[in-house]
Image (cartoon, rainbow, N blue to C red; front, side):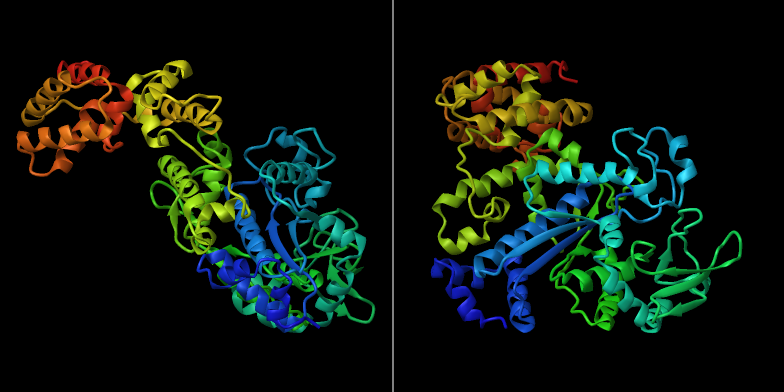
Length: 537
């Protein structure tokens, strides 16, 4: 039996760290505390985490988010308990191919294999024995890219090896109870043909969705009509000759493997409830977990793989590091968030802000800092000379993709900065150039200044002419305030908004005093002159 919680945690070498973890309000620790109670209740000797993947398509940003968040909970739990943990990434590759994906080559090659298990469909990319194996390899490479620790499970291997045989026989025993749970959730038409078992036809190899005519519990078989010949077929439910409909399959996996924790999207709340009831009927304990909110696109619509709206993993990593994406996944998982290009700069700067604060924080604050969870308790050091947002505006104003030119601006602002001493920032330079050219430049929209704004800009240019080239950002910011007040703007916000729209061609921007100090006093005067003469548009 599991030892009491206080004894479990006493084996951790740093009691202060354990106490802080047990009291932390960070959501991974809240989830981990639920697992501690589960371990006590069930007498667990191991805690098993699971994430699921449907390999009919390529891995996507939701796959990353689920594995990243689960890994954060797993690490939080490891801080509180000495119980071993595992993470299973499960691929439902025995599922039948229902339609040909839009984003694959050689569609005619796989057309004859519709309704066959994914591991029986030829690989349209010509790299693996099957389409399922191809997508599994893509999933594993995808997860390995981010350094996740996991055990990979293939549904095909689990079913055919006999690993699920006892659980499948248990589903057969509880067939009526499973049907009683599922049928009320289905449309009337679907009720007529539904069965939790999907026999794999020995004649065609198809994964069949057919009603069950008879079940023979003692023999471990089901009887169904071949949909093409009408003949009755008796078939074992074991040995990979049947698979389960996905909600029953989900429950069976939880039961067979002893899964303790699995999270899922808000759109699967009802499915989690149904699968949990089935798991309980089988005699298992449904896993803990929580339902995270879904991501939205720029229009506030739910992101969909079939629509292709929102950001992909590759698109995010084109403009920013995996760490910034993990931060975005960590923050407010139960809150719907827009996942579009314009969230990237803010996520990058927030990540480095959290990273910069970490060394000076006390233990409680560190455990609540996202970078602790992103880096499994060992965040790297960081020393950025300027923010990513400011760097983006430098690229925009200088209209330069030359890294040496950009580093020249940065060194003038921060003389000790260099690519060698600031390798992390050096990578940001490349990200900023790419982000500007792909996203900022196409959306730039300069406007002419109003009469009030023109007079203010002329006054600013004259004041800058009296500035030392090495004037501090604070001194320049104070000058900006004075010019705005003297010009008669109703609010200084209107003044700074005008600076962004007239000089930078965007609705918002950095602290302008810092921008001038970075870009240069003389260069900013030239920028104002170009705007006043109508050359920027």
